[in-house]
Amino acid sequence: MNLVTKKIVMSKDIGIHGNLFGGIMMAWLDEAAASFASEYCSTPNLVTIRVGELIFKKPVKVGQHLRIYAEVIDLGNTSITLQL
Image 1 (cartoon, rainbow, N blue to C red):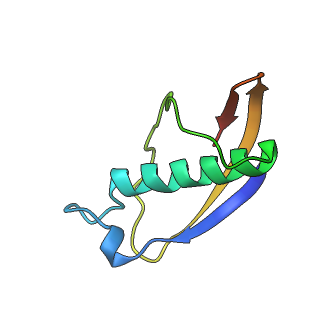
Image 2: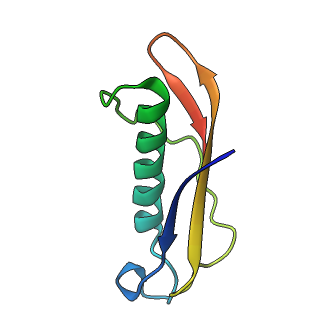
């Protein structure tokens, strides 16, 4: 897997239970996927069609660092499937 980006969790990213808000995490993953796929396919003309599954295993707290990795699972004529 290739390192795509790093994020530091800040207080503005935290939800009411003191953990990283899931919507923020999803936005970071979508941005990382778009960046990786755009570079891999050498085009900015990409859109997210589907997010297959997102499992939150541990809470993420303020000050923690996240590293997002990606790899290509499948490449078609008009589609790319990634795992992050």
